Image (cartoon, rainbow, N blue to C red; front, top):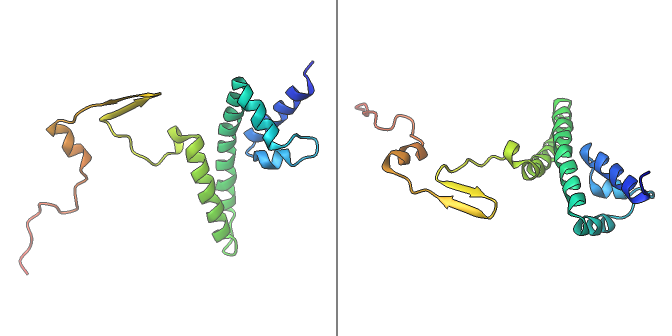
Length: 143
């Protein structure tokens, strides 16, 4: 049989996985406040991992919801929907950077945990980092 605290944690993780915010979840009278949840997570690394996993699943829910809202936006609501989508995109990119990050990986820098490796580029690597300009090197036509 689950304790009251375990049942609360299960409900919180389910709601986070559906894309709800911890603030909204904890606003219910049946739930503890956010500070209590943060204290529990600070003392229990397994709980912190469960919450992070639930938030990551919730990021996918937010992605789905924002896509639906943008698809159903009207000319009167599109600006608000775009702002909400922008915020969601930023949040999702932080929770799931391996999927939603806009940063390009630098092939000469490898970061793993607290370790990093820098590989010096050779002259053959340099060409792959420079994007050619359109018509660069093309002969100019006389005017």
